[in-house]
Image (cartoon, rainbow, N blue to C red; front, top):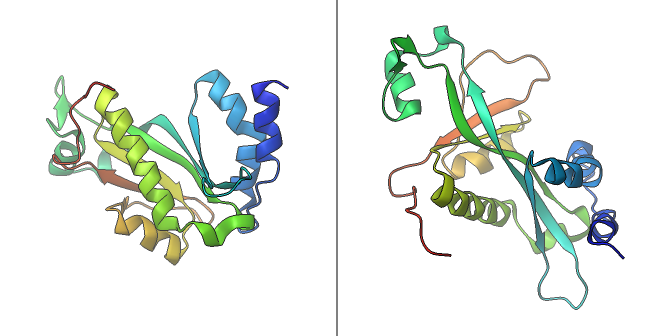
Length: 187
């Protein structure tokens, strides 16, 4: 059996009733996005069992955060860029980010892992990648649900203040602090 076929078989039993988009991404797009280099999906498994169970997953990708010029003061722009508010005399409105594209827990094993633990795994992967590639802004998009927003706020994410449409996902960002930015190590 091919690795891809094994992967399809394993993810076919992932269930997320609260958000079918999370379930369908894993089942229908994750492997294709891996092949295309659009994102990387990390699967968290239960290592204590004889059986291989997917507890949760998260997906990371590179993204450009575009903010309309009228929403950014020079100070906010400099804070996002980390160096300057302008490039060649023009205000910076696009910032490279590390995107947390999907985060989901498997309903079949939800009691075995908390949202806090999933985010800890996610940020660990981000810090490892950041050590090689750089980057200082982590972004995610989420539904406007208080317990989800509270979870992300515990990790230092802040809602990007702008007007959102009725069903539009909120954008939240975390600017990595100097002590979170890791120097490359030999791996």
